[in-house]
Length: 225
Image (cartoon, rainbow, N blue to C red; front, side, top):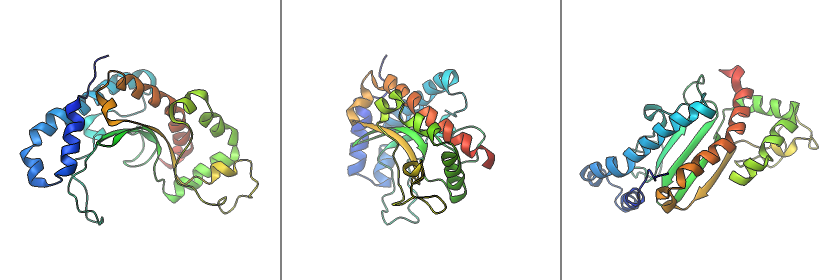
């Protein structure tokens, strides 16, 4: 399978990291659109076709999936105006914007990240997720210990509490899972891998492996829609 990204993609992002300036970017915007944005749009379009076969509930649309290159610096100490990576997320249909679990990948000068899950659920969603986990711990445990999941991403990741959340006994059968505040599963690759012909098949492999986690999380959150 032909590569979608090229070595120019990462080269531009590395140069951008050294010239994180609006005027510089304005002068080189055509390169960004050709070498970074256009390949990402092509990947999203290809994923839209493939999701129809194994994840029809996910949205793969450049108008929804692509993040803007400009950073929101209003509440950040880092006033760099531009992101030095390009990322795309694939949310689940039926959830309000920013809610629900989904898939995501990004290409950055320092590497690639592929995976998905739930980054920072609000308190009400987290309470509901913990209720679902406590009710049937084996269901989530089976997902995160499946051979395909472990081979693709290793283990469930994300911020955790030091102890079991209030309302649950310390010796609860799902104690380790109940501590999670985030539910993330992903893997990293070297930046140059973006232009390898094996990148897109690998992207699909990881997404397929993480999808059961995404579906589990969304099923638990469905009543909140």
